Amino acid sequence: MRRREFIILLGTATATWPLTGRAQQPAKVARIGFLGLAPAAASANRVEALRAGLRDLGWVEGKNILIEFRWAERVDQLPDLAVELVRIKVDLIFAPSSTFVEPARKATQTIPIVFALDADPVGLGHVASLARPGGNITGLTMQATELNTKQLEILKEALPQSTRFGVLWNPTLLQGSVFGGRGVTGIGGRPGS
Image (cartoon, rainbow, N blue to C red):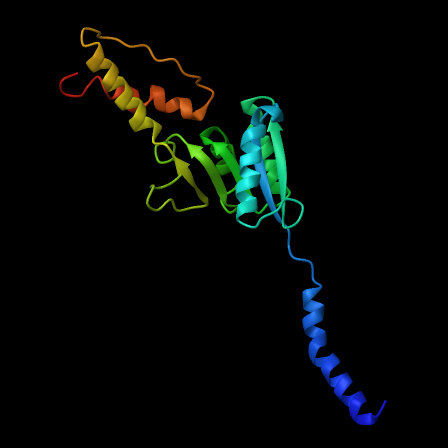
């Protein structure tokens, strides 16, 4: 090899070496914490829908994301599981519904929390407003408070002679609080009620 060829080869190798070094660096794998109620099989369809949605966005489990599942046997175990997800430093906590948002909110104010469906995120104090959630929590809502109120209004119109309606809900579930709270009890005081 001649001197000139050697210098060109050395110069090219020196110039491209930092690029090849960077290309070989493994990409950071994002870690998603998932809070759920056991048995896991009961949530299989939702978990697969989450995985499919992530894949559609280019996030493939085992390649560039890792999902850390935490399954509670009882609702009262959720706070400890949320704290565990914070301790292992997940990048995001996924909360399928309002029931899971509150324990996650109490566990962290810095890790983003994304909920799939929150019955009343403003009313439950999970976000400041729908337009500007603020903080570290965001997601989708179905406005259950307004829907429940409307459903009872329709029931009252269909049965105008009725003066009382009973409402059953599970008080251990946060989304149940909208049934017993301002959404339902507010109907009785409206004009024409």
